[in-house]
Image 1 (tube, rainbow, N blue to C red):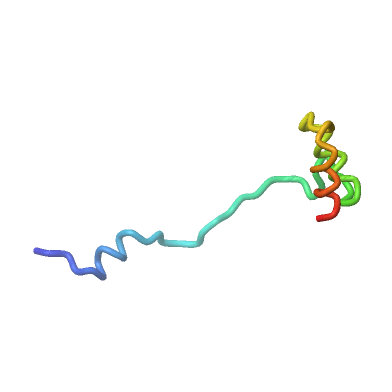
Image 2 (cartoon, rainbow, N blue to C red):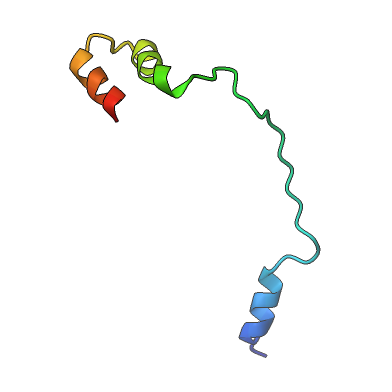
Length: 60
């Protein structure tokens, strides 16, 4: 006996309530102000020698 499309879809769906568990923190450990972010980013990526790119990044 062939199963109908409805039977197949019913078998693929979950029954009962879905539960999502999320554990985290509201503020990250390294919070950086937007105005200081270019300096922070270029310092942690060892790219401080790229001054022209850093200035362009600040303008964005």
